[in-house]
Amino acid sequence: MIQQKIKEDLNIFLKAGKSFEAGVLRLIFSVFKNKEIEKRGKGQEAMLADEEIIDLLMKEAKKRKEAADIYKKGNREDLAEKEIKELEIIKKYLPEELSAEEIEKIVDKAMAAVGATNIKDIGKTMAEAMKELKGRADMSAVGAMIKKKLENGK
Image (cartoon, rainbow, N blue to C red; front, side):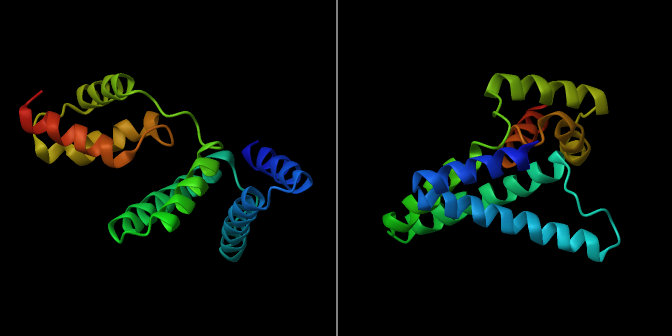
C-alpha cells in the first residue's frame, strides 16, 4: 500500500533529520487527510484506495511542475529548484513512467479499439488510452501524441 510506504519513509526521514523530505511527505499526508474528510462528508468510506492515492500524487506532482515552470519564467531559480526537489520526492511514490515507444503502442491500440479516424475521436481515444496509462505517463504529452496522429491520419 502506497500510503503505508509513505508513512514508513516519513518516519525514516524524521529519524535521519531530513526535515525538507519529511515536510514534503507531511504535506502529502495532509492532502490525503483532506480527501478522506471530503469522502466522509459525502457518506463514503474514508479509506483511500491506492488508485485514489496515485491520483492525488499525480495532482501534487503536476502542481509542482507547473509552479517550477512559472518560477523559471519569472527568473526565480531558487523557488523553481525547491519545487523540482519536491517533485522528485513525490515521483518516488508514483508508478514508473513508460517510455515514448511504450506509450505510442498503447495509443495505437486505443485508436484501433475506438476506431479513431479523425480529430473528433480524440476524446474517445484519450479515454481508452487512460485505462492503461493513468499514472504512468504525462497525460498532456499523450493528448498531444493522439492529436498529432489523428491530424496526420495515422
